[in-house]
Length: 243
Image (cartoon, rainbow, N blue to C red; front, side):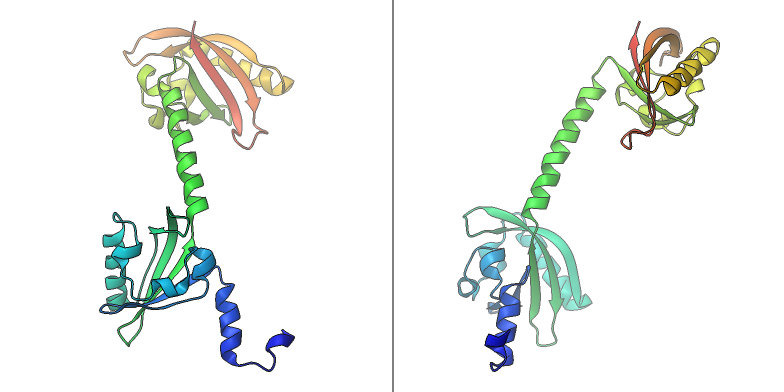
């Protein structure tokens, strides 16, 4: 701080802008970028001077140019637009994801702020692919997985339930499991859940009958585990395979 006490306000502004997590550009519809903040160097990996005079099509990913231009236009009428995710060319030569916002000024200029969102967006895409694969595995599995809370209510069910039971897997959730278990087997399954609660670490096995989507009963071998203390489950997990 002492180095700047006798300096100008501009010197302080330069330091603040250079170390900001947001990069900023001042855009004009005819002149393109007329100002780029010092943070462009570390947020985008490109020298701020290299942005001067550029238009969206020279930096934004071709698939996102239309979106970037539309957001700038929206800002001219609403005063602000975004945040929105767009891809821009990084200094490493690849396109990175950035969170962008636009603010319109009365001088016909638009301030555009950019924050690096590449790591988070990439992690979300990776997680989505993993979840998609996990869902496909469960959807085509011969085993049904059901989570029961408060003894009766189905909290979660695997996609494989749709192809087997008399109702879709999404319709099962929030319903009473006794609707698809044979009436004569209600007590057996309930006892298995109670035994698993008493033993905690033990898996209790019981054979019951489920209602098939063709409205006939079929026997399944159930493995019941009390996972009420597991925050990912929060109930009794029932794995059911055709007996």
